[in-house]
Image (tube, rainbow, N blue to C red; front, top):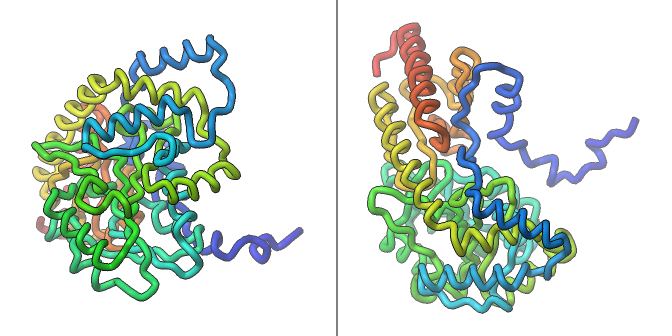
Length: 397
């Protein structure tokens, strides 16, 4: 028998498994589990989008497309950016259609990072950010976004982690896992910092359509001087309930998109044509369905926020995405202990905050992309768990 540990890439072996999946592997073996864990809409993709694919298959749309994606889809993406953010992109040179934002992120990292290059990554953040940097040969440098600033990153936070090897900055707002958003003034300060230090900016805006309480999403490349240095990532999974379709895109300068396309054509070839057909329909006729889903998320956001407040857990009010990030330090449990004990005793699955970086310790991430009935039951179970635990430990919160 071969010793595979001596053969496998040291880089791959050094990357920890996703901190999200472990609890759901356990939950899959249990009955009566309510999941507030996976960041996936509970809505089915709107019928008009699904129907467009049925028609496409009937018409024989089963071939490869251009590496960059169908021109028709790229034109719709460019139109959206123009109409919503007054951004001008060329569909022929500035757009790449990818297999979800995950692939777009991987391509962006591999296109810009050389061995030893550093990329600043505000935390808490999506679990794959640092892993993608490592797999591209770069070094993800975590920068703590503080609860005192509602998890918004500042130039001062970033400056403390600059080095001669710093090449890029990755931001993701609205944020997974905290639900934080960045306003125009916040982002303008980051833009000035990026310009002063000549940083490439990767802006993951997959949750850009999911904002609440009067907050309006600001596309980072729409800020003065930022379009030329920003790789904008977005997709359809969250806003249009299209997670399983695996369709996203990247926008940027022709040179960077060409480099990403070069990698894409060797490793992926193209995004599936059926998903591209669905994306065209989503951009043309899906907005009304998206707005209905966002209204539902907003109701659930208020409900779950009030629920955690009532049970005595401190909680930042999320303004975007569909996650809430309660502080559980008052229980005396670590994030992993809280999540595991809750799952075993009350059959509620959620994600320990430590899965999103070391500064996520002391928090848990709960997704409210599930029905109000499920959220209500989950809150009752979490409340029971917290009450029993603090009584047994003699804790007052």
